Length: 315
Image 1 (tube, rainbow, N blue to C red):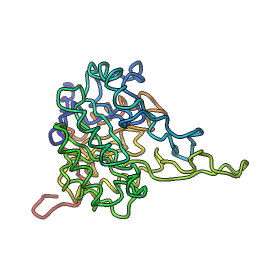
Image 2 (image 1 turned 120 degrees about the horizontal axis):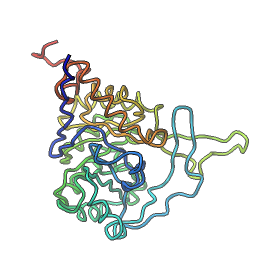
Image 3 (image 1 turned 180 degrees about the horizontal axis):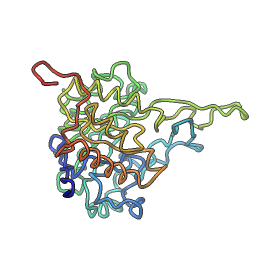
Image 4 (image 1 turned 135 degrees about the vertical axis):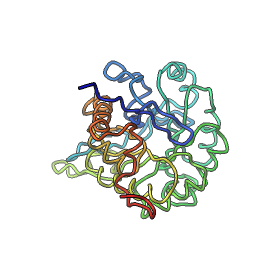
């Protein structure tokens, strides 16, 4: 028997083309150097950099991490060197990385997002912007940008007007109706949606009889949130016509396939990197083998196969 036909692993997310559908999540992969020994970035579809804000941030006081059954709580608080230091000290190295680089930008006011978006343009060494709209808008009493359709649409439209890079809206699951938020960022001009950010959670130390995190609450990630993320991807894929990057508890190739069947065109590995630094490579290999086994010439053929068939479609 001859060797298996090679699967085309390239995926197109609107204006962004990736060599394969496996990415890494912001906040779990630093600025691309930290995992280089384990996982050469040229093997990945791309990496998402640690979240950046206009000014440097020390983040929240420790303890900032707490393990939970099948998950991890974090309240790092967007610790980062700030825009100016990033551009001077990190961007020259990032520019040399042989992969697609996505910068994650955050802010606490519309002006913050305006500053961040304006700093990144085509040719700068970054290929797309992921917009963290899970931050509290300090000028609106702490309401998170991503929890109301109007504010989500407004911030995405502002960013879109200030940069010529593809814009990825990263949505928070801590909302009543994820579909309404997805429709809002589509109206705002988002090119791509990433789903989901962490789920708000809490852990209490029963011996100390107080919250385990200094910040009291944190973002839950890991396998515990995967069913929530798959459900949201499945819902949003039917409601908007934007490509989706699925994330939330992906540890294995089976998890990645599940997200893609639900409608995601790419997947991003977050907490899984802490458990197994080789996870992205193993997931990529498993995805390709799955497609070969099922006779698919392109990995894009599996996207959305679990979605309800529209009228006129075959079985």
